[in-house]
Image (tube, rainbow, N blue to C red):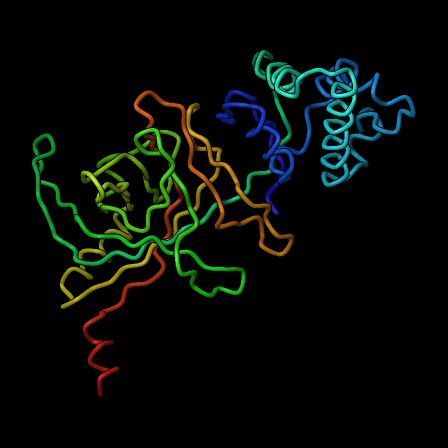
Length: 306
């Protein structure tokens, strides 16, 4: 399990209470920092907790209380506050918006929450590579365009019939099974906040019923050279693993977990949504990218026939 980090609320890219609560429930957001947590309790929970058994685990309890217990208390506080406001006939939307706005209106370090990032994973199997060249400044650089199949596995590493990942494109949520793939050198398109192989996933390619996202994979030269070698094979097939977390995303891009991660999963899940409220209704999300395998499909096919 990853170590907790203190993350400003705005950097989580949350759009509403439902997304906030989902991140709390799944344990990505553990709890607020002590001062903010104490203020939250006094404003939303205190009247609903006459027994005082839901006091925030702060002061001497901050270091001695496990993250799992802090998170469980925070969830119970929200439930207690909701039951209290419901008993006053307050509309659910109203008190949920008040809780969301409480955190959204905090500024800078005052808005920090304790977060343990979870990974959302999808593999992409690339085939039919086409090499292209273009002028970049004074240099001619190469890249590869290919077709990609989005693949996911269950907790026993069995391949699922369909990818469960959803992503927002043209204001709608799609469960795409394919993507247009572009493979380039990392050094030609560096991102200041990323220091390893990565994929920029999203956008929109194609038209009508054939609309699908693009996976722009950018590999450091020591990995990109294997793609160049693979291109010389008769029928290469390349598999990459894409790991999405909220940490590197732009402020209006969210990685939302649709299903709680299992305790033994190491924090990985294949049920997730890449969401955004960006103008145009289409997002671009960053993922860590790992080269998993290169195979010569035609060779395997010949072996299977013999």
